[in-house]
Image 1 (cartoon, rainbow, N blue to C red):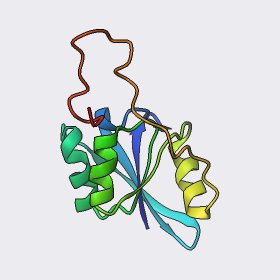
Image 2 (cartoon, rainbow, N blue to C red; image 1 turned 180 degrees about the horizontal axis):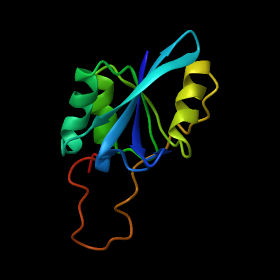
Image 3 (spheres, rainbow, N blue to C red; image 1 turned 90 degrees about the horizontal axis):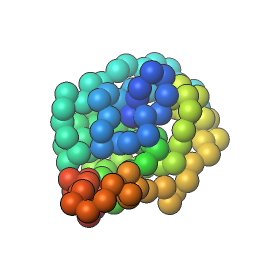
Length: 126
């Protein structure tokens, strides 16, 4: 299984659509067997699902994520585990072992409170 995590300084980066890079973990038999950094290369919100699918990703662990991104990932066959914080390595190991604690209802809320005229660029499904 290939697991992708939006990555910054060893932590699960909390805004999927703004991730500059993903750590891609290989997992087998309940253990992480390897990892490599995948730069997003400015792919933008809409292209991130395609980038991950093109790299054979099966699962995404993330913090906040919008409805549009969830839909694109589902269409690409990628299972989403949102609402995760902390160490990316620990999260990948927990998913591989079947013990990951996540919030299936975690959503993108970064645009709330920004005031009139702010949009989320379509990545939040809005």
